[in-house]
Length: 239
Image (cartoon, rainbow, N blue to C red; front, top):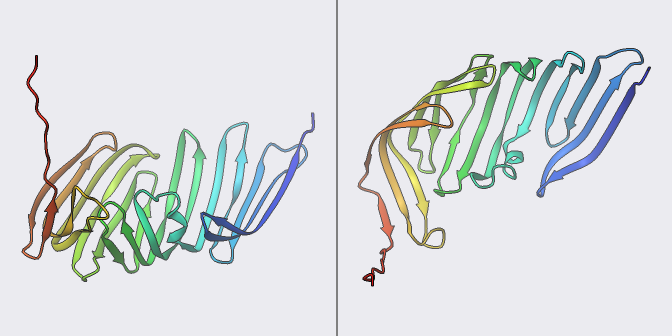
């Protein structure tokens, strides 16, 4: 009738797929006679971040506050290894997460610091300097974000992702560039097509994650060189 518990977990030099995360500490406590669970999670060392708050298992209400002083982008590489690799730079920020699992209210911002990463499918590396992305219970606002490729050509990304408590997601994003490298591969990467491709483009992204819509106006630039393998089809008569 008076069940309660305490948890204290500490991991030194936590590593994920050979990427050092840091020293991890997790504490949880539910005082005797209380429903509320108090939670504290801290990462120190290579990354510095903390998450603290409360959770009521009876009402399912949580109140969480996170502070990120430095979170190295390379930590995300093992989880997104089909999309990006060799990431550099870090993010910082603060946010709160309050409400219930059915209606979470997320508010705060993150700031990028000299971020760069390579897109796996295209072999192109993009970077951006310091930029703030804000989010609330109704939208994620990317503001005006400038991306640079390895040749310092740039693209401007702007727009918002609108949602209702992280549900009913609607995108309204735009990418514009007068010339950006969008392919940087060799035959060893992909025998069907490879090369160096540069494009002038205006891309408008709308719709939902399940049904996206892309309106694209694009022109390849003279410096592009694309190799496409011959496709041989074996057609045989029936009968």
